[in-house]
Length: 409
Image 1 (cartoon, rainbow, N blue to C red):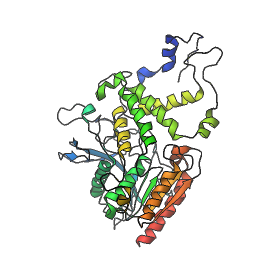
Image 2: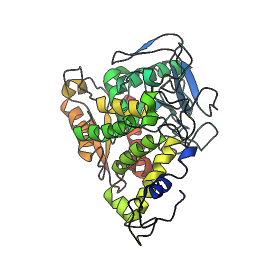
Image 3: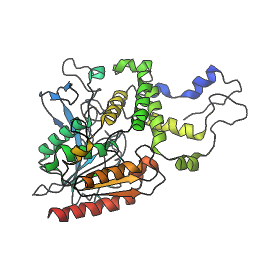
């Protein structure tokens, strides 16, 4: 990010220059749009069938983006579903390619000889409904007028996502997943798979997630949504024809900055940035920055280039709505539906989805008579540890999949 010398007055001109010198180049949306390169994506169309949502809305002409690695065996027994987190997508493995704005988010886990060995497993990842990387979402064309759905797109839930994934499984010929695995928002999907389709799941691995969203988690995500809502360039969700620099890039970036604080621990921020400054403190100005601020700005702008503000609203709302016990007589009754063994992985330093929630998952399954154990990642990296600590995640994950295979046999 370009920097500007800071005067001692700290006036409005300084603030504007320092705020984001390159904001005019940020797109109104970073969503994949029809006509863009597909990359490694495949797409499944539901045709003209309306897709009814848990919350009462309806989405027409649904298209689901997904990617696969490996080959389905003759008995269709080696398929593993990996569910992505909030700002992930179907590109879970592979390099940065045309059509994909970032490299695979779990590339260290998925591939030949890795924990999810694609010489052995068929690994599938599906972009969620309401997302922005090839699956129908707010940036997609509405079938009635060809304009983006925008503010017309209804609220979706984790259960809606699982139903679309079941359609992808049917399309691929997968009658039963050997395992459903996911971190954070992906872990919510794994839990719902176990409850919604117990006969179609051989095991589940929820990572850094919860049985139901807590008050503090709702507080964090709702704050980000409020930031976007207050942005006049959001235009109540209908901003897709805005020129670069005139979309809700500022608010989406700030929402990402807020969430980024929860993804890492105090130790990591302190060790990496300390009190290092960007602009020298030789005369105070309101907009002088510390290095940690510049890092958060970078992360915010980086997301803007590959994500969509409306999708951010929808997906964080779905995370807040996550409650395994909703409409099922409570969590205890819901967990009794599970038939699959569970490996719950938590992170010691996680402040967003604290470690105790992973232990709660395992304890609830055991209390209902199921098989479950919890594994702790001893990492300073906080919530992001499941994306960073490849060995700590990969070793127990691979061993668990072996155990499940032996049990199934």
